[in-house]
Length: 272
Image (cartoon, rainbow, N blue to C red; front, side):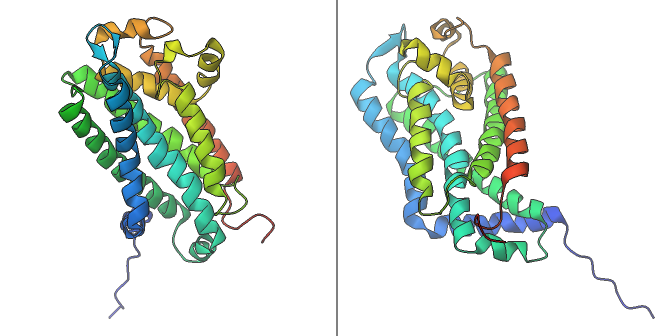
């Protein structure tokens, strides 16, 4: 009688388990997890309270305009910023080196990171839209077209920012120094991409600078979801340019994938 064969878990199954592990680690640090969700809401409350009643266009308050930008920023926070800071910390304390030495397939590790990013983004967007709808007159999308745009913009934005966060994680030499490098980049792109200010009111050179990066196009796509169609005239081209938004986000996804494959490291620089 032959001995029963043992079936090993698949890469996807291990990836699902890795998502569970990553989520537990994420919420175990309660202060970090709370700040991750609270910071965008705090910014919304501050800017909404100071500028919320001002109109940026007929029937469009600054608060409605701002919420669309903050949802785009939510992608940047949960994907690019979190990964570009968390991975260097794991590399520095030896977590990545230990994981590399286990039988776990490499894709499963990244599935864990991606799954955590997606779940955190859904929770953050839900919170932002809820606060915006209750206190600042933000309207939830009502048409199939708006929801379709929201879904593809979220998927492409998360893909681009996640891959870029993984790729950028090699830049900080130490985990402790990662926030000092990553946070200013996020702030600069927020200020120049039409998150804190109406994009067309920024200096022309800032608009040109922002157009090279994904956050500008993600914020523009989100404005098409949460603002009325008439608001498209406020964009530089006088339209939402959704085709260009999708193209730029897809392009940055490809760039991020190439950079992540080429430059990602399991061990700190200077070690074997």
